[in-house]
Length: 291
Ligand code: NDP
Image (tube, rainbow, N blue to C red):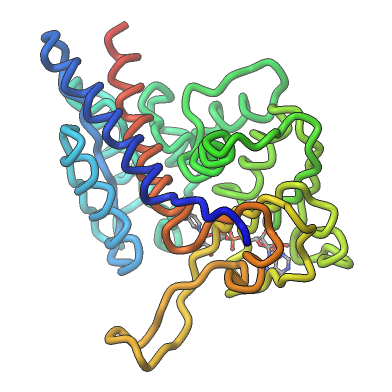
């Protein structure tokens, strides 16, 4: 049976480290880190994510600034709000919750964020640096960073490892693949046009699933002993639950844990790490702000 990677517990340790770092700053007379979350419109899932991030920030001693903007805000109006946050000394990190409502240009907004406050790591400059050999981004996107943290935490050898990343999105698949290349892994990126998916996945020493398809990865897709990280978070109908649904990952957890060497569950794996890494980035942003 696979080792179960307890993302909740590992994330709690990271959050405690961040909280200690914040306390040490404040005791040393330095500024309290501040995180501004920008939420445009009323996407219920985004509202939940933003609330979770704010709560975790407050718990770690980070000031949380809640910026809510109407769905019909203009591109110019949104960019103005972000520019105003760039200028504030008490805001060290700025997070624009994605996706933005239709009609707003995500790339342009992300480009307006001060690169020194880009705690989500989605500014084109940070992503560009991630893609270039020998150049370091100031901030790494939280979810991919969380994946790497989990792998490091359990002592997974990345150098020379055969890695398969399922998914090529800007926020998960592609940056996680780049981070693994940087760690000298041999990386295959799969997507909706990949042929013979199970066969490709079976080559992996490390398999990262970020597709958004409930329990797609089956036992026979996984090499015995492989490390499997499940980023997927999917709702499936379940009448036995009060809410009428439950959350599952992209990996068929029960059967895959019979063959994998280690596996991160979903929920309870990468999800909690995402928030912990965001808090870590916010503390780093405050430290950068010290000059
Ligand atoms: P996207 O929808 O942006 O990307 C999905 C990727 O999977 C695409 O590259 C797509 O290929 C590929 N894909 C979709 N279907 C298949 C298929 N049948 N076979 C092979 N490849 C396929 O999703 P995200 O990257 O944003 O998210 C992925 C999952 O991770 C979701 O479940 C999401 O909820 C979860 N997530 C979890 C987070 C966390 O904090 N734990 C944070 C962010 C996401 P193509 O490019 O060809 O379309």
